[in-house]
Amino acid sequence: MDDSQDAPVETLVDRMRDKLLSLKREILQHLAEEDTMARGVLGNLDPKDMADVATEDMDRKTLETLGAQEVRRLNLIQSALARIETGHYGACMRCGSRLPDERLEALPYALFCVPCQSAEERRNR
Image (cartoon, rainbow, N blue to C red; front, side, top):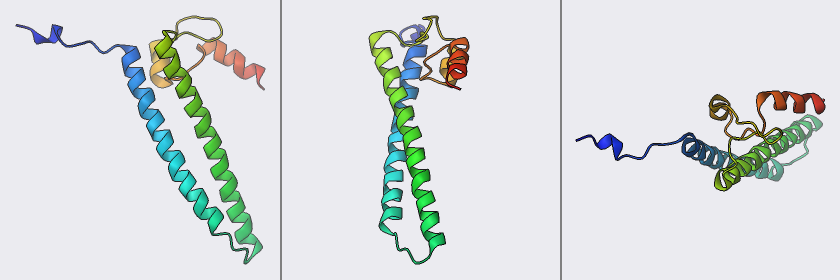
């Protein structure tokens, strides 16, 4: 008797949902850690000398930039999870073609196929 036929087969979409949820947890944890660090940097401002103030300001700006990038990724992940729920996951948002599994494995929140992504990048230059 072969029990392997009774076990559910995990689809690409299931794997990507799990991967996206894992990425979401990591980003939220990272943002929480950054928030704690940012509060520490901001709370410890003691302008004894200009070099320290400049360094602290640079640290603050770096944290803000990293946070913005993480928030952008989080939004892309949320969008991908919504597309999974609506059955539109894995389709290029521009031309509608099916994204290759390899692209989704590498970037599970990809919005565009490679040709459309290249066109988007050229347009945004």
